[in-house]
Length: 233
Image 1: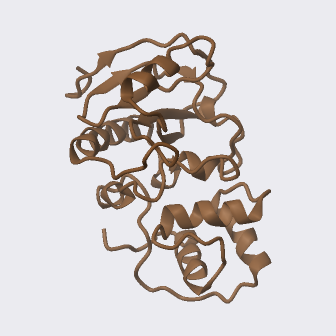
Image 2: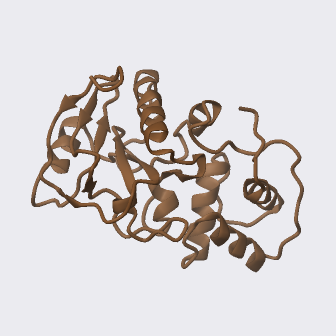
C-alpha cells in the first residue's frame, strides 16, 4: 500500500540514475496484445525499456521501477525545454493494444486506478497540470499514445491535466508559422511541424486529427497559453 493505493511489485532491471528532479508525468499505452506480454517486455533486460508503473485493464497497478530511479519509457523526447524526459518524469504504462493491435477505449476500472495514482504522484512532486502529458506530446514524430480514445477529460475534471478550452475562445489570426511558434512556446518539439500539429489535435481535439491548422486549433492553443485555460471541467 502507498497512500491507500495497492501495488503488485514486478521489478524491472531497466533503470539508471536520475539526472533531473521529477517535474512531469508521461502517460503511455502498452501497444501490445496482452498485459502479460507488456510486463515481460518491460522487464526484459534485452528490450531496454521500462516504466515506473503499469496499470492493467482491471485496475491492477504493477510497480516496476522505484520513482527515485530513471525508467526508460520516453525515448528521444522533448517537452518545455527538457530533452532528458526520462530523468524528469514518472512514466505510467496503461494496458491497451494500441493502434496496431485493436485500439479500444480504456475501461472504467483502469481509469479508476489511474486517476488516484496520477493524483498522488502529481501532489507529491508538485507537478503542474501542463506537465501531465502523453507520449505523443513529448515525441510527436514517433508516437501516438495514449491516443485519441484516452479520457483526458476525466483527468482535467480533477485538475490532474489541462482541460480542453471551451470558454472565451478567440481566434488570434496567426499565420501557420505563427501557430507553430506558439506550439513550440507551449512545449512541443516542432522539428516535424505536421507531427506536432497532429499531436496537439490528438490531445486537445481528438475528434478531428487531420494535421491542418484551422481556426479551432488557433483558438484552443491561444486559450492554453493564457494563465488559466477555461474548460467545462
